[in-house]
Length: 120
Image (tube, rainbow, N blue to C red):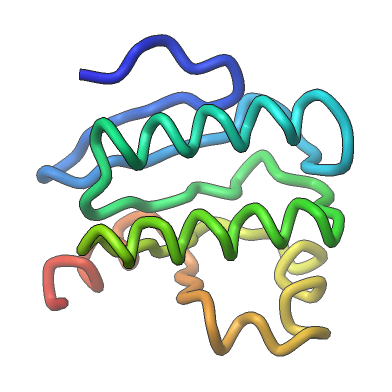
């Protein structure tokens, strides 16, 4: 079982970890550094099928996007999967500009992301 995470909250549904960020922005600085540590620890200790719930995310910088791409690849390298859900139109647009919405699987709702992981 993982320890306490400073930057993420974890819920488990149907064997899938749903992670929510505790802050509304991911940008350079101490939160980003701690989020990297927390996600690495999570991947090493738990891994598996993961949904990142962006419902409270208002802004993500390029460094934050790099963090999400790194986390996705880390999970994949360990046989896990990542889905993203509940992104606001503004946050989703940031990913679309770099065509990263074709690399990272976005879903409108948590239930849709759960269904996609069950079908995978």
